[in-house]
Image (cartoon, rainbow, N blue to C red; front, side, top):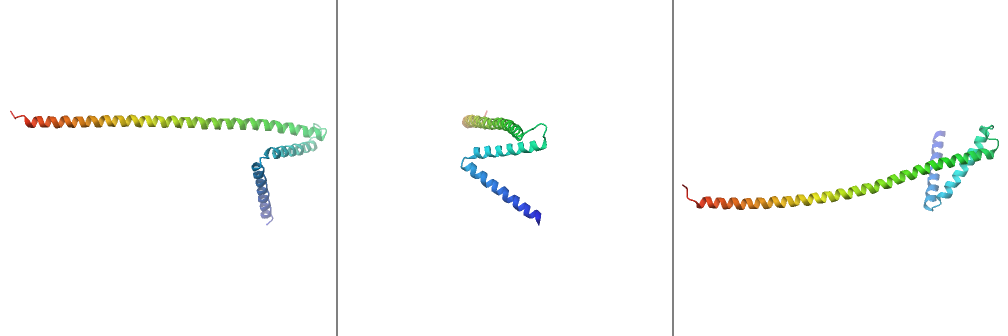
Length: 145
């Protein structure tokens, strides 16, 4: 029963986070939330690292400085990667649209050539039929020898 309560509370917390994130995105205040979360994580990680490693981090300020610089590095790498993926996606969309357009033009040209070929074949068939009819008429008019 206790695990059910935890699962229910985790679901409520997740729902609350999703609602707040949705509101932040809708109100275009995402940057403020991201900056606040980054600051909170940086300060929390700085305090934690100070208590874990007293030798390398003599003060809480040193720990916070290390955490913020580390978070900044991560944000830079993630940002550059995101921009690269975004650029690749947009480029791929444009290239695909261009290929689809060229393919449609090629299909249209092929269909036009096929229609012209069919029209010429039909004309040849009609002329052949006229010639055959004329030949049959000539052979019928000619006396047998």
